[in-house]
Length: 114
Length: 114
Image (cartoon, rainbow over the protein chains, first blue to last red):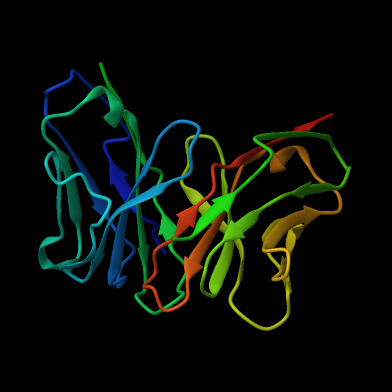
């Protein structure tokens, strides 16, 4: 089966610009996650969707980050305006939705903010 | 809140030698435990997980880990490593009954040398 797809793979922008990332989860997976992985650190959960509803966005910097999952399938994560400290890899993951179900990760989008 | 400590940021080892990657966690409630591997420019892949039952868990690629509740540890082991095992390894915890949120450690870079 196809894995989690993400695009773009790489993005370079200047600070104060906006950027958007796209994620297509594994077909049929109800739960979708966005993680931020800063160099030298482990991934940190930004937001979790169950179908098209938000389950947890407690660590999402809501003044600049936004995410949506229209129709409960694809998702987009947006940063506006970007700061230097937003340079990181943004990972999307999906799971079937049951408790303790394995999360499958996409290859990530590497963002560099200059 | 829960946390994960991976004391070794880098572990160099010769091919065919055994290896142990250490993971300790802190949580006031019961947790599930996971090990993920990340190859360069790829997303995370699940190696193994402990949910309940036997404290010795076997995973893919010949890896195994043992859950030790009294020492709050979940160390990853492999009796004989291969060059292809060179990657970043992340330990993660998930609080039971707390949704599916994973909290990751900072990772251990395993470098297998000839």
